[in-house]
Image 1 (cartoon, one colour):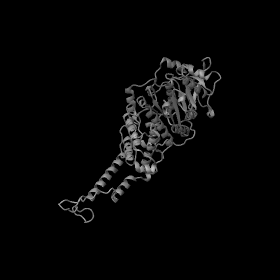
Image 2: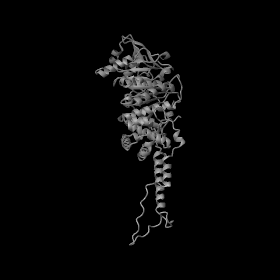
Image 3: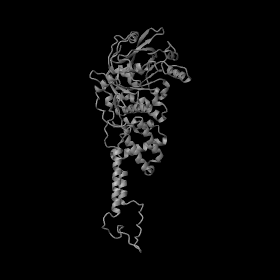
Image 4: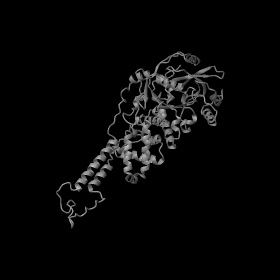
Length: 515
């Protein structure tokens, strides 16, 4: 039902519900992005599954999140079931072959897949501020922290590095305020408390090394199929802001690392962003603008981004306009917002004179969708009422034992298991503080006459005795710094290096590893 240039999605129906034609997604337009929407239980996960299968068989790597755990079945061969066989007959899928797909399981917590990590520097101040829900003033302090780390050559790898840098900033608030603007200790303290909450929620598992290598989610197998990276997200969804920030970071990393390829015959990678509303919910305008920019530009890197969500209103119009391939499952229209969503969804399609789009959206059955993809020259096809094809892999989750065996046999097994804690900001700042303290102690000892040999008139000789046997009071210490103390503090505060100043940050403020 599909050739080397397209993915078979299903079969459209005539007004009398009889077979009309096969519906395909052309691979050459797979990087023009897409949208899969619909209410809970209408078949969005199956649509995601059959698209991932199609891209994989075409040699395109896929990255997707498994929110409920049932997408994991794509790693195992499907079995014939009556309702699946009946659907295959309805859409004229002949032969209906079953197969398992090459899957790599990932998990930010390292429990249901290989650990995924990123360094704090790679995340950048904008995404980190979004993750921590910082105020404008606190975000300003975060930007100063990253600027300082870049200038002074301080590696920010994990949470303790950022904590150490923030403590250093609080101690140097007056000095830094004269250089970068107001830095208040209450703002720094608020950021530190938020970091503590994130750490308790498990975000500390995400920050550190070894960081994820983009090449590991862009693998192909020896038989030419694209590997499907499945992120276990059921536990991650307990912290939805971390989930959204991670996927946005990954998308920005792809944008920064991959070279320009123009319009390839098929995508280099397809990225499915499930529960996409979490990305845009309460997001500041500057972040939405950056997301829209990344979505618009990442196409030329050969990456297709497919947003999966319940309501098309969850995606801002500026982003929605970039999504060329659309699969719209049923929506319910009980509330004014739901009615608006139905109207919005209907208006985004190229109309079909055979039926009213808005009415059809509310009447679609499970596994049925309105489908419109890009045709020749990138023109959207006329919307069709379509029965979605059944998957070739297992429908439903795999067992814990099956998952464990797949993880052990994974091509990246053992590469990310052990945390690497190399010298970074925490150790560097701790070392500088220790050296400064030792130098200060040596200066005090030298100034307090540790030796009994003294030079008269230079402050080391004993005070002359007063009448009655009393000694004169010692002179009060001066608040002025000695030359040695001034030199030491100057060195500690200006360890900036040409390497630090050469750091380049990308479109979302994350560290550009590919530069």
